[in-house]
Amino acid sequence: MKTYSPKKREIKREWYLFDAKGEILGRLATQIAHLLMGKNKPTFSYHLDSGDYVVVINAARVRVTGTKVKNKVYQHYTGYPGGLREVSLRELMEKKPTAAVKRAVWGMLPKNKLRKKRIKRLKIFAKAEHPYEKKEIHLL
Image 1 (spheres, rainbow, N blue to C red):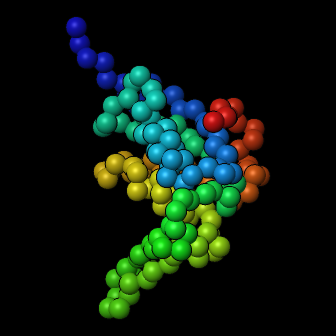
Image 2: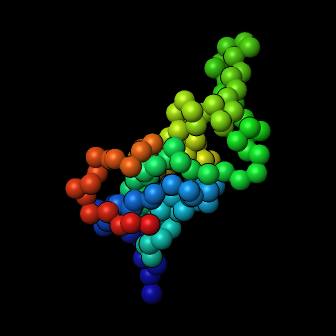
Image 3: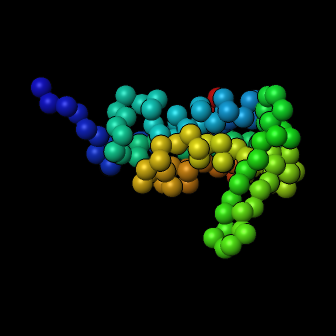
């Protein structure tokens, strides 16, 4: 008996919709990363990108627990001397609420060559309106 390995042409991608209103950021990010990797499918394999598309609405209304709103800091280094930039979660949610969800999912995806391809299938919107309403989307 041989081990089954799915081919690229056999991969079927589905669309999932998450409403982030009132959801906890970390728990939402783990569910999204799980779908982007394709771990919900019986044909999952680590070396293939077999994940699904995920649409997240109401990203501006996501919750965090504890004192993360004021204590959590995201850092980015520009590459220049003295170029370490810091932004708190509160500032990030005010300026660009979709970035907090994207960064949380980005951190939960495996650190390999498929990471950039997987994150491209994540569509995040701050409000409830999105352009993917004509697609057949599974609500979660």
